[in-house]
Length: 187
Image 1 (cartoon, rainbow, N blue to C red):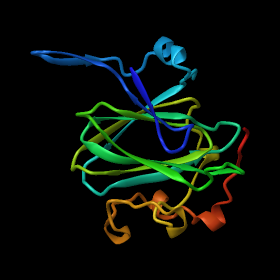
Image 2 (cartoon, rainbow, N blue to C red):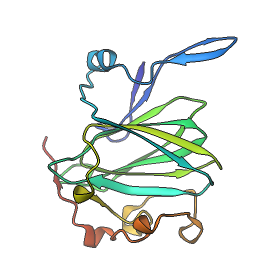
Image 3 (tube, helix red, strand yellow):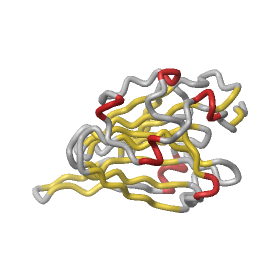
Image 4 (cartoon, helix red, strand yellow):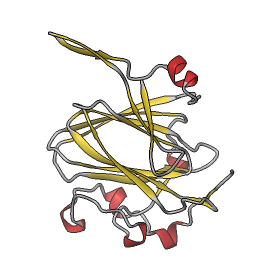
């Protein structure tokens, strides 16, 4: 398993090792012991799978409030996405900076998105299956987010705002100035 740093220290790209043969390959999607040995000690509580049928589908920018904030380990099982982690921890030296990484089934790479970050992705292919592990279960009462195309976020999405395929929920998310992110940076 390979772990690569990004421009934001807490966000990591994780690429599991693949064992290939004429049938295809085998990879360990998640190995708690290996990650712990590499300095990532997380207790995942829920797994999610999302399917997006069309290129230009945007899901995000989501986060979950305390007492159930979530760290996510995100990867793609089919297709490709641009995956984005946005630092919304007040007082952080990287506050409102983001990391955008192309995740693909072909590469098998994953993005570790810590709590205190808003997360979202845009599909780059017509069929995309995104799998993610979460450190806290989903809670509708704690579910929150920021409107994905808010210019204040400075994210260069691969789809124009008017062309994106969105859920009604994501379309109605507040802009940053109204969202008031609740996370504080702890050094």
